[in-house]
Image 1: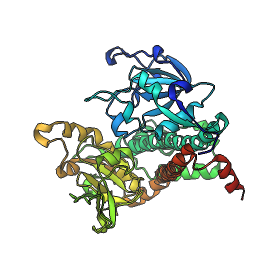
Image 2: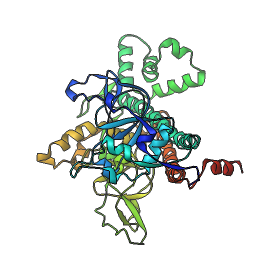
Image 3: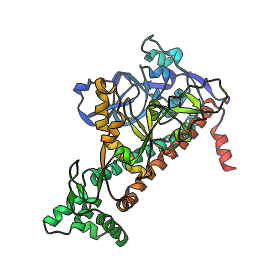
Image 4: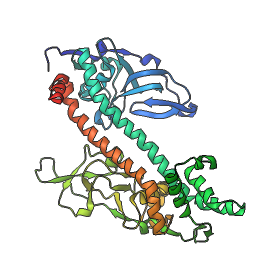
Length: 438
């Protein structure tokens, strides 16, 4: 730590806005575009806001103040509402607001908490938290370095939300609602060009917009449209496109159940793998995970890019990018030699609502789905030629999602390496700049 660093109380570094907080009962909230924040982040979206700008929110109560499974301090930007479970502050003329967020991330606050059952951080104790602070210009430089990484991670998250929404919409249109096929049938009945009708549905463009497409894009779109048949056929699960078939989830993919893994003691020096359970799947990382022997069959080892599906609890299906680990018994690792990864991922996700309804009936299912439910869950599958062509449309969207998530993991690791060193003064911004210039 440099000689210019000083120790200060958080109350000496901030302006507090707790008096402007206002809780709203869930029954009285009206849906809208503005985030409604609580102790651990956004809990709802409402039609009005209390704040507009950049503020630091710090959890006032909740078990997370002890466990710190998620950050206890986080930035809220733009227009938003805050209930009375989060303190709201900004840095004053002595402190950078975002620097304070990073400083709190490395500060032990256990001595400032009250409440034997439910931890609470009162405003008085919040103000007493001691922080080590460099000069303001250094604070801003540290916040800029760490913030740039966090901003890119957040941008990747938002891009992936958009990509997933696009891919899911295409998947539902093509493989659930059969929109291109139905558009062809309607066009034939009306004496119109069925291929152009399918092209409009697939692209979302008008005839005039189709005519403005570059020739190679037009031809590719026409090729895709041509792969959809012009008629439907009966099946045991209703009408499907001619030449397609209805397949169960467990016939298009292998749902490998994980293992009941014996814990390795923390002091063990043996080679181990972090155990990926439902909690790790939700968090997207193995922080705080149990340890298990690395000497397990390769098929039970989880790698980045694997599709994981939790068959109990909240039931989630995700592409894992949290590093190598061991598959827990409450998760499936999903693989297939029959269809592309994006297909079995979105096919599983499409059935999540019905799976969750089954799991909710604990009287008969004990809060989870069973193998037979994978057999009962059906999806329309195109012939191999069609699936290969559709892979050219949806595959790149899915691959970009995976690449973005993996890039964010690398950036997160870099941020988590730099943060303690920058916040403690072990590493200075000047030293980083010098190393980069060399």
